[in-house]
Amino acid sequence: MRTTVTLDKDVERLLREAMHRSRSGFKDTLNAAIRTGLGRKTAAKKRSLFIIKARPMGLRPGLDPAGFNKLADEFEVEAFVAKTRKPHAK
Image 1: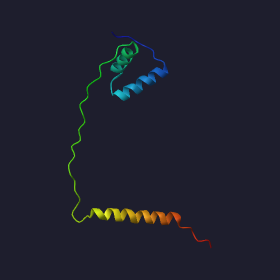
Image 2 (image 1 turned 30 degrees about the vertical axis):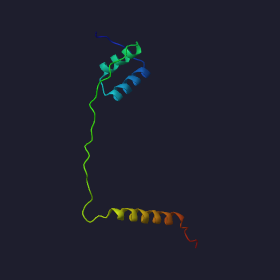
Image 3 (image 1 turned 90 degrees about the vertical axis):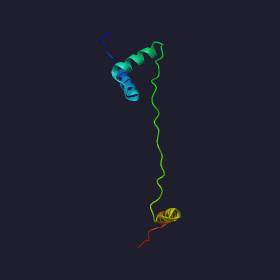
Image 4 (image 1 turned 180 degrees about the vertical axis):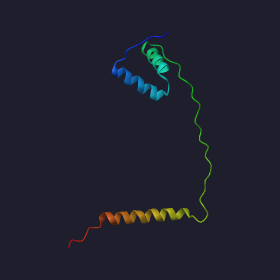
């Protein structure tokens, strides 16, 4: 059925937000909202799972993993010293 409806500003905003969240068009979102409001639940769309395929990256030759901790410690000490050092009054 095709019809013209005048929506209040707040209802239009809510509908546009629902469209954005569901990534659905105006018609689908409006029909789902009306069904829900009238007590008939919509069937949830089944989405395919997003699967991340991990693979070992390793380190480049010549990089020492223990060296990263030493470097982090040095940065931490430098930041502490810079933060606590008071400028000399002239």
